[in-house]
Length: 400
Image (cartoon, rainbow, N blue to C red; front, side, top):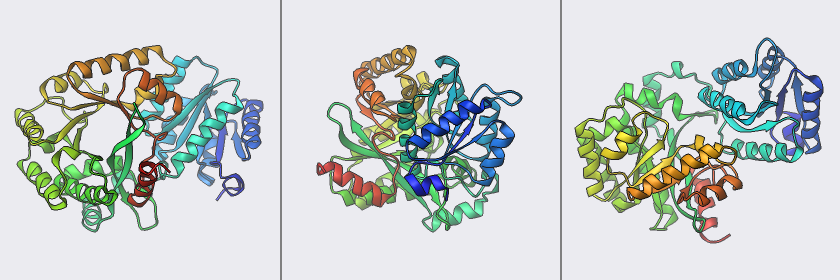
């Protein structure tokens, strides 16, 4: 454990900037907040220190000689889903593009800082980073995706080691909690967590999709019932190809009947991953689910080529605005305009809107002003294991 964690509770920090005086200034700012930061002036030095003692947060300058910040972000993403803060003298459009590159490499971008770095802005981002650490957000998997076998995945699923974490959702009008989204995590015996991006694709290869969904749904309904609030809803993520399986609808209905949960408390979130073509059996199955009272949500809207076609052909109740737009709306007028238009589209089709990835109060307030009805994100509540989510929700519901 680093001295920084011992002394202050702040996340440990590693700064990469080829200008030693700038790196030292940032480290001193961290020190003024009660923590300690290490510095490096080259990619080689950065990765040497990172391998020796991985930090909780990497602060990376984009403009570097020899190997620039984009190259560093690419390599770092191949090693970890680390939390990073980007810093540069470039304008915001360059920083936003770099942020998207970091996210494409699997990194969690806490935020961006422009030079000269301000203490108040750094303090805010480090506080958000600490919130992420409490959830295991940046836990580095000890098992690389290509090392996970079907046998190990099957064993984990059937012995209850793949579990849902629950992220709360609120109504923006009055900030009340309305439900949760179940997000899968693979728990390891040593306490580490394998993120879903590392094992979800293998579930399809192994033909375990339906068994996995049933397991997540069972645990989610146990959690939902334990809170005892019949108005709360639960969202589960379902691959589009599963929706053409007749067993899917039967499984849903059987599990809900077992737990005495009404259909309209379940939202089925469909991501845009996979082939863009929508098959008629999938549309028929989704239409029947709507007829049976289930709610349908189009997830990560705006990030795939098939968005509009799916929006027109499938009877969705909800449009979820992708987190990348939430990250940009406070700095980019174009992002604000896009969110406003998406809200208008949803209203014209009698759909609700939920914005994902809300990580600060400014984004929350602006999302409400732009017309979004619901919100999720780390500022509201991170994905939590069932016991933590239950405690969080009961305090919130009881006004504590």
